[in-house]
Image (cartoon, rainbow over all chains, first blue to last red):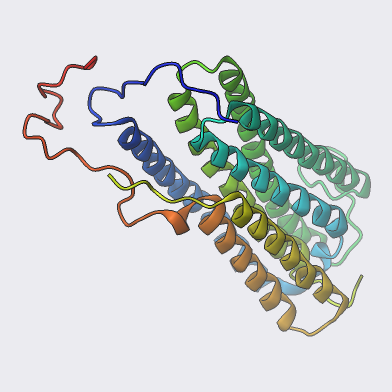
Length: 222
Length: 89
């Protein structure tokens, strides 16, 4: 049940209404996500070029990745995207209790993703496939020099993605406090919408990381 | 001013179910070695899932071309902030 808003909020003076202010924030977030797309797009393009140059080496390295663990992580991340969409939905109704509930779910799912990612990184270190760490590289597959290139891309893509996750979870934590406090609910709603867009974008990026890095060479080799 | 539409909870649930269902072909195809079909299916499913997320979770499906409110037709309103409207009005 939505809680009544104590007093109508006044938009910043250069907006006609709270709704217009909300839409401006949304548009600004879409512009930011466009720049993020350029960032990830650049990395994916580089990966694709090197992948086409050394397909056998990249295939051998890709088959060593923990694809089952990351399948679980994909489901976890999709679930967090769903709970965040519910947060946005209830934010529109200013339903404080449900916003708090689903924000907590989203944060927990995000943290679960990071913990599982930590297990994967630990496995990589044990397997000796961390090229940039002292003593972390003892790869026994074909063409170790070029396999390093694959693992650099792997850690770059998953690392940048995980960094975005950490930023996202931190923002969700701040918004949880703001929602708990419930001062200026329309402002909270605007921020929830912006962070919701960011979170969904993280989901989308992960889907392409999972398909490109983990599954692209996997066939009949379970 | 027209209210911007948004996905209902049922639509969000259906989208989530579709996203999970699309994981089935992604994972199932790893059991078969169909050459170039494997990456095509994987990336195709990823594109479909991304479209579902962008359309329903990010609300693009529900946004009009220039969604939300537009500046008032009131001639006293000025975008350069020298408007007659006081910030507290």
